[in-house]
Every structure is written in C-alpha cells, then in structure tokens.
Length: 450
Image (cartoon, rainbow, N blue to C red):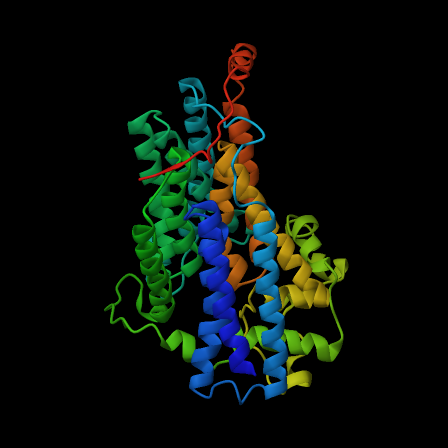
C-alpha cells in the first residue's frame, strides 16, 4: 500500500503540472516549480529510503501508510487551491500597469539602493564581528554572526535591492547604475550562499535574478531552456548540501558529484523521516498548537530577545526553541529523537499546528500562490515583484516550515511594496490617471514567449 501511495504522488504532481501548463501557458506558474519540490520530498526521498530499507527501522507499515496518505491529501489540496485561483486568464478585470516613467524608475533605483545598502550593512556587520571575510568563510557552514536577529536577518534585504535594480534595468531605466547595484548587492549574498553551501539562499538568488527579469519584460523562456535550468539548479542545491563540509575558503574542495547520498541516507535529520516522526509524535501526544506558533512569528518574534528574553515561554510556545516546535515527543512516541536543527517539510509542519486542518491550509497556500501569480500576469508592477519574492521563498516553504517563511515574507514584501508606492507617486499623478483611464483592456494574458 505504501508503494501505491508513493506512485500516486508522482501521478498527482504530473497531472497538476500538465493542467497548469495547458491552462496558463506559463512556465512560471506556481505548480510548475513547486510540484517538483513536493514530488522530491514526498516521492523520491521516501522511495530511495525504501529501496535501501531505511524506513523500516523507524516506522511500521501502518505508520508509513498513514503519513503518506496525509502527504498525498496535502499535495492534492495545494493543487486544487492553486488551480481554483484561476488558470485561463482571458480578459483582465483591470488594465495592466503601463510602462513606468523615467521618474518612477529613478525613484525605484533610489529605493533599491537604500534597501540594498541596509542589507549590505547588516551583512558587513556580521562579517566584521567574526574577524573579517576570510575568517567568516574559512570553516564549513560558518559565515558571519551578530547577537541581534534583526542584523542577522537584515541581509535578506539584499535580495530586495537586487530585484528592484533588475526591475529598473529590464524596464529601460538607468543601465549603468542598475548594473552596479546588482553587482554590489549580489556579491555578499552569493558569498554566503555558495561559500556556506546553503541551498535556500542559492535557490532564492537564482529565482530572483531569472524570474525577476522575465516577469518585468513580460516574456517567458522556452520550456526546454527553463526545464534545463531547473534541473541544473536542483542538482546544484543537492551538490551544495552533499559537499557542505568541503566548501569553504582554504578547502581542498574534494567534492562529490554524486548527490544521491543526501537523499537515501536513513538518518533522523532526513526531512521525510523527521517529518513523518513529527506527525506521529503529535498524534501520540494529542498536542497541537492551533496557530500559536505562526502567530508568534508575527507578534513575538519581532521583539528583540534582549528586551524580552522569555518571549516564547511567556507566549505559551516554549517549544519554538526546539526545531520550531516540531521535535516534541519523539522519544515517547517512537523511541528515537529527531536530530537538532531538522526540518519536517510543509505538510508535517502544518499537521503539528492544526491536525487534519493541515489539508485545508495547504489548499489556502495553493490559492495564495495562484492568486498572486494571477495578479502578476494581469496587472504586473508590484504584483510581479511580490510573486518573484514568494517564488524565491518556495524552497523554504516546501522543505522546511512555515516559521522559515512567515518572517521572511514580511521582511522582503513590505519594503518592496513601500518602494513601489513611493515610485508611483508622480508629481503628474492626476494627468497620468486621466491618460491611463483611456487605455484599452488587454484581451490576452499579458506576456509573450521568446
């Protein structure tokens, strides 16, 4: 039965991708790039573990069947929610945003510079704190550090700076200044992504650069080219994780090109094993958080620990300090303990939070991605940038937890919205509104293939 449920994931992902491509004709539809990641986590990884007899020492057949059924229903809900948001976009409800004026592009470039420099300052502070660039990256998976979470997370603003500069460049804005800002803000991010062998930052940067360009120009790459880049990016992500201990300044770089070991190694830190354990432990304990962990990310996490040292304990979620609350009760329920720092994947994380309502939340997540994609296609402008940002964070959503996404979305999205709002406040706003009101509605989806 477990094998049948595994293959059902493949069939479901294939059907979802086919429906997305056939209906939208858009290689950037969320189902096209998220379903392969879901298929990797919920089919390929357990399939490889099963072939190596790596699951039987952790779970019995009944447990595996139940967990995989939950995973299958979660994937189905995500697909249906995303498709329900809209596929065949024939006639937009509002005209797509007209080309940006040079005034707006200059303002956006200023916003890119301000936001990116803040991110650069945060990154530089963490590097200085550990003795400089060489010290920061002379050990595997090291990098900079600061006691303040705001400074550590502030380097994420580099991505917003890069995205806004790419938007200006691809919209015909100042070329030299845009290229300089892209290079300036890309270097620190790539250094911590590649020299620390971090899969999430590497994936996010590639998506920001490539998707940021195409969504602004309203074009799409050929399917074969996009597929080739996706496969190469997937291999690179696995390569970095496999060789994390060998990639740093001064290393001999004795790396392995065979990346299958990271998938079929039966350890308690494996995402599928750990995620399955999280679901079963929550059932055994009959304990769920009912959105308290997620709310704490919005209300509690922004408060510095120096100001409120016991913030999670006082809010009623002390478990947040142990693998974001997903590692509780393993010993009593399963007889083994999940590895520190492990992540369960999105479906297990939702299950720990809201029990069977995790399936409903998966549908809402799918609808959210589909809704923002539709806005990006029909209206463009700030919606296109917002879609690129949530697409860049999709690897955190699938492979880690909601906690890894919620705060990052807020940190990236809000400055981007503010910059767009400021850039569009032209001194000739009233005249432009009158002129724009005469633009005809488009009858097409708003992008073309190259």
